[in-house]
Length: 324
Image (tube, rainbow, N blue to C red):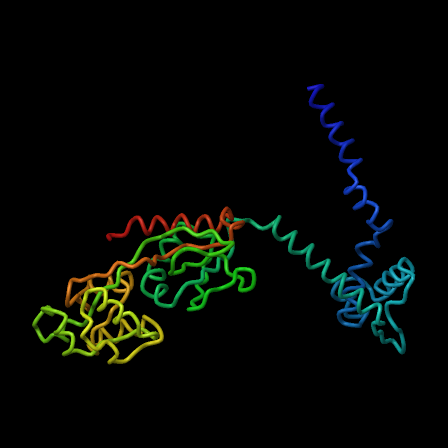
């Protein structure tokens, strides 16, 4: 115990002689204005009214005036112009208000981070509209049952969000999993599958070969590349893959196939339920594995966050429970 105490004393002495710490201490103001005076100033400056500031802080206008005067005396500068029971910020006062308000904002954020229960509140999940509609949303009820104190907001977009700008906690992305500065975990791989409505084939049940595709309309995603790549991968290079309508999102593409408008080539995860309930069939059993997969992505420093951990754990439990 004596050794430990001596070590603490030595460490403290070392810290006191650290030139960086000494400089930080010397740079600190000799006397920080009273917090109440600063709060009174911020309220009075925000509304340019001692009366409104007094109501907001539940004190008298005279008290606000005195706090502001004390602050002006401590700073040695005039913060307000006073005339006919009206006050206006001086140039220095407006600049000081901006800086002090920013400091209060930082304190509020820090206090919220310390006092909030990390296992409660809102988690924002970003993903593509098609994945949200066909896979994520139908399963979210099970997450809420397991985590009743966490509310989920699903933000659907086709663009890659920026975590530092878009206020997103976790994202589910479709790609190769290489995202600079982010932590990503592979959820599952996908295959491209050919699907159509059973009624489109007129009771024939199946397409015998690639040449039969010329009798049907092909349904495309927006970039209109999947069919040409799929046909080329299967050696069917003599089929015109450019014909047929295209859709800006895969949900519409799937709905067009269900409506019997043609044959679609889509990610298997988006149509497995429709195949199971008979609304779609595979006219040819020629699936196409791709290098792409779905990934759970979050900032590297946030993956141990309680809410994000709860969501990731549930997400992988759902994936492991899938029949694939």
